[in-house]
Amino acid sequence: MHTSPDCPDCGKDNTWSDGTLFSCPDCGHEWAPGDAAAGGGPVVRDCNGNPLEQGDSVVVIKDLKVRGSSVPLKQGTMIRNIRLVADDPEHIEGHSDRIRDLVLKTCFLRKA
Image (cartoon, rainbow, N blue to C red; front, side, top):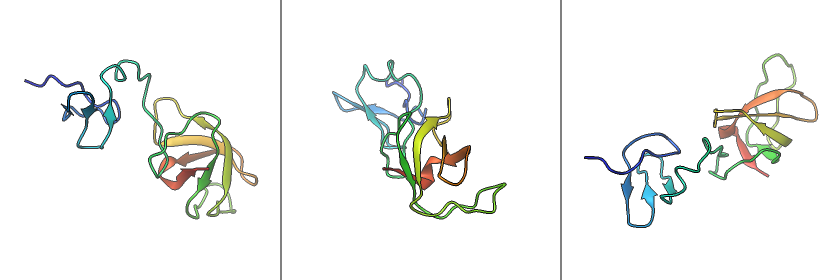
């Protein structure tokens, strides 16, 4: 019988306890027993695994083509004052200096 809670990061039930922390071998997430109930939603992370929060600045890690624009988003472009997308840990919203109203995947961003 499975007694460990589901992973709050990936949602899978393949978790185990090492005494003080719960661990998920599927995504590598570790959390304290009290943290799972107080989570409040998915954690948004950049390409390096750093947690992102509302208002952070991020940097684009590779050139990206932007739909509806002839101007590509170049590597190293700073996106300031990001907004998190509700219930979607893989996307953020923001503006660059040249392109407004962007929705970007977090796998192409790193925290500045």
